Length: 230
Image 1 (tube, rainbow, N blue to C red):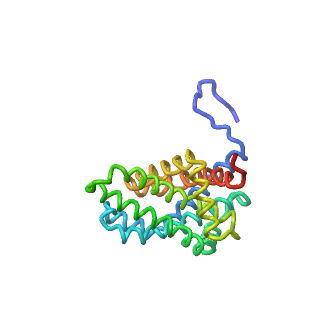
Image 2 (cartoon, rainbow, N blue to C red):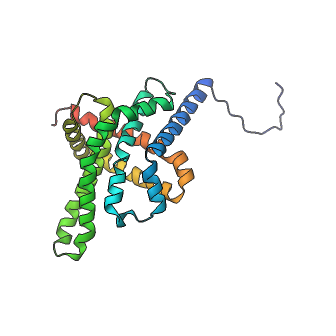
Image 3 (tube, rainbow, N blue to C red):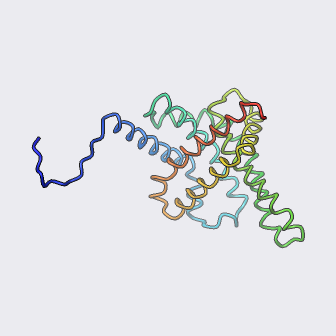
């Protein structure tokens, strides 16, 4: 192949292994986005119709229960990609079916506790003890949501653990590794804002990237439950 001295066009010398790694990441992100969108479709449609979900707390609390099994399926699929970098969509759907019941049971108490605390936070400003109790309720919301997310990441790694054991480990990890917990909540919050602002572009790109980082953080947090506190 001949070259010209004056040809200054950029050349991308990427090895075959690098291309394989790139496309494996792209494939993983696309599968995570697709499975997350399909399994949470009722919740996504409801949020698209009603931009102020806090006005209907019971309805959206019930719909948000779908997010738990969806997260568990995504985290189970990401764990599966350690063995097969291009695991198929069918593998993610099998994770959803296998983890649906334990994920729902573990996600339910976290969702209810967070919902009750959020409702109380909206009512307390009009009451006398509001300024005193509000910080405590805010902490309850953060720990509840973080524990739910970490529990979903723990289920694929500990299929023999009971729901109670999973929740205790997730709560302990959320408190002990609170910087990771806050980082996860921040990432999820940013992802929700982006998806809400630009649904098509957001759902096509953001969830897979964010959930991969959240999943790795959750694994690091869960490592704390396997060590003896000093």
